Amino acid sequence: ALSMDGVLGYFDNSHIPPGGERHVGPVVHDEPVFVAVGEETTCVGQVIGVVVAETREIARAAAASVLVTYDEDASKPPIVSIKAAIDAKSFYDNFCAEIRCGDADAALSGAEDGVRVLEGELNMGGQEHFYLETHQNICIPGEANSEITHIASSQALTKHQKSISDVLNMPASRVICKNKRIGGGFGGKECRSVTFAVPCAVAAHALRRPVKLVLERDEDVLTSGHRHAFHCKYRVGFRDDGTLVALDAALYANAGNSLDLSGAIVQRALLHIDGCYRFPNVTVRGFPCKTNIPSNTAFRGFGGPQG
Image (cartoon, rainbow, N blue to C red; front, side, top):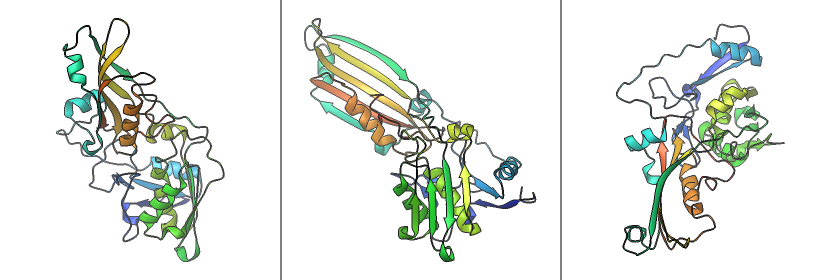
């Protein structure tokens, strides 16, 4: 790739400035900016490096010519589905949640006369944000390469500023982030856009010249996360007159390979689970599942629709 006419360079983990953070994330810094040689990739689409060229066409051709070799660990089969995560007990344990009110176990055990119990399971699939404009970033180094201007189709420029500042080891006051219009977002450009903004900034800082990074639609859909798929196991107690007595439920969300905002999304789902109804006895639990798909993220409703 580097020998192709018009290619300006290849940039990866080794180009992060001394003292710069190598991981980012809105709550927990558990996402590598670049997966370094010898490190583990945890999903398809993780950023290993970026090729920069004079034109978009040359850059794409050069990137396609790069051969990446992986060693597969047979002892760690990928976890893709919620069911596989439940079987493996693969959760973000510190971000599981529970809400209790009254005594659901007693109400559902038959201790109260006339209470019928309905139980079952249901699945809710994920959803692509499909904003009109894909993730786009322009990074322009400033005076003496000690500052940088970043223009992005993002809903969360503060997150961009903080992450670029941390990774480039540069004061936040020298990271100027701008946005003229988002091009659609719906939550999909709140946190996941940082995944593409920071590598663009690293490349621009290393080259000392402006760099633009634009995702094709297929790349955007593959790598930038979706609404969380959910699985629910529930028991509902009710009387013949329709009175609701108790609810016991467990919600499992496919969070993906990093936490992102999944903890808060699961909490919101639990808070919405009773809808407009009143259950005097409630026990509901939420589990963000750690899986090997690109990290899922905010989507309009933020767990409310799933709840």
